Image 1: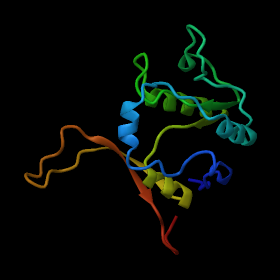
Image 2: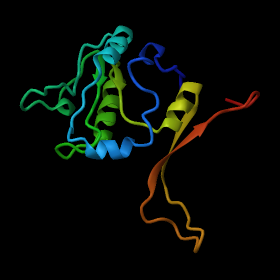
Image 3: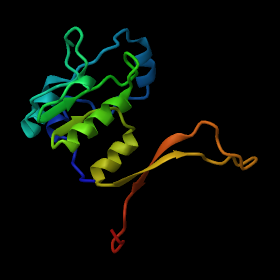
Image 4: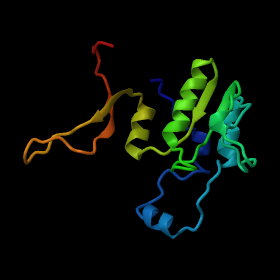
Length: 160
């Protein structure tokens, strides 16, 4: 994984610490749809030169970004929750499909603050798949395994 520092030019535009009341505030908000801040898009577009957005806002009637070919450089700010029966993984899979065709795909979605800090530092990420963790009480595996990631910071002299 290539480490890329968060954009320092956004420090005065996008708060880095929202505070402990984030969940409570989000529950009170009546808004359900969010668009990319223009300042962020401008910076990213300057680097990636987007020519297609499969998740446009407003979305043209009948348009489904999962069922069309994408451009050469794509900005993907997908719905984070299931929308019309399709979740975030559908957008990630489509992005991978398009990347295999030689296209650039830049996808944005929420991650934890801890993962964000690790990404800035430069981590290796591996997909462990759906891990069935064992209960400490009876050593039985969970019935609802989560997909897990492994985040590695290798020390000096560690093999690559």
